[in-house]
Image (cartoon, rainbow, N blue to C red; front, top):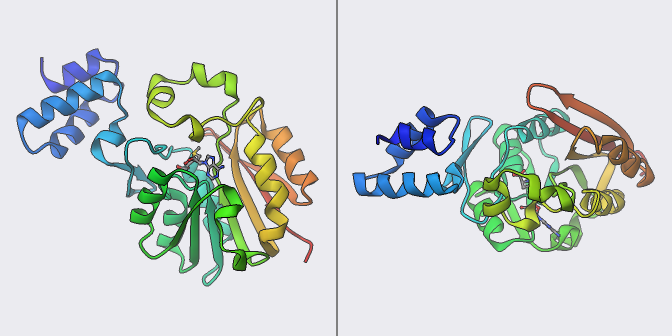
Length: 251
Ligand SMILES: C[S@@+](CC[C@H](N)C(=O)[O-])C[C@H]1O[C@@H](n2cnc3c(N)ncnc32)[C@H](O)[C@@H]1O
């Protein structure tokens, strides 16, 4: 069976595109055979290629690291719309750092990114060679000197409710770390933690942006308001993306 047919038989929707990318990535036919076999087993295409496309750029992504989603391009775009040159931007829960790298590629900013997983931090360092990448639990990873000075704080936190993880596609549930997906019983544990501490880190007039789901969005808004942020929702129907933006009005 040829590569396209093997991929199609395994249920790959974009079998032609995947076949072309895997063929380009392999240097020998034996290597291609291994790549196709691993893809047929369900390993994410991006983990096999070593990169994911995000807003037209290739972001390094390694096994064990969350693959940036197309819907998250909307979060990056909304952050870019709020960012001015020379500002301080933080990408918290950065994974491979795609959001922070995408902002830094368009605007000259001081960018910091942080994640708890060493594999994610290693990828983010590759994608943000001129940024500051930190490892640790949420804000504990950041230099204390950033307190009260962050202009744009963007955070695609884990937000899948724990009991929904079993319903996710096998690619995500079997090949992405649980810690990248699990947002606790209602999926909002990390949003609560990130929003509660955001006013300590944001500059006056600074913004917090997080991705959420349509169902979770009323509670996400209320979490932001409880934290003292002036909150609103933005939605992109094409990419099925919903984000909450919160402004820190108090100095
Ligand atoms: C949904 S993924 C998003 C990754 C990246 N921002 C993106 O959009 O591709 C969530 C990320 O949060 C990280 N994470 C989970 N718990 C964390 C914690 N306590 N502190 C910092 N990062 C954490 C995971 O390692 C994962 O990379």
